[in-house]
Image (cartoon, rainbow, N blue to C red):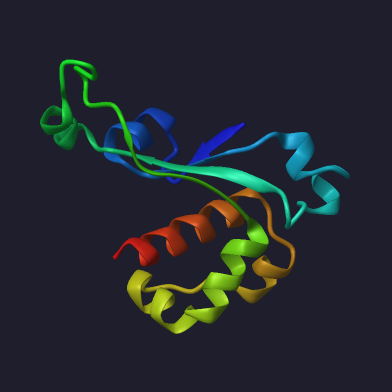
Length: 123
């Protein structure tokens, strides 16, 4: 399954927004009601936005397709970075993640956490 920070995956791809990709049965081995496996890795991606792709185009890659970010992390990995740098990450994004959401996360909490942590790391 693939989800993104925008409601449309095409917009996420075109604008360079964060997406995550995962296998539902691996992320939720005991079903969604029983929570996600916090050690299961998901693929976190952010493509180059349309306006940059023209500059990246080459003979081998005429459309400039590529990723700014293409890594794999678990919820626990991301949470560790978030908690270590919580004040800076929250200040960078002008928001914080509700602690109750961090205790019982779903895939959208994981996506938000991935987006916030990766944006902080890259700045």
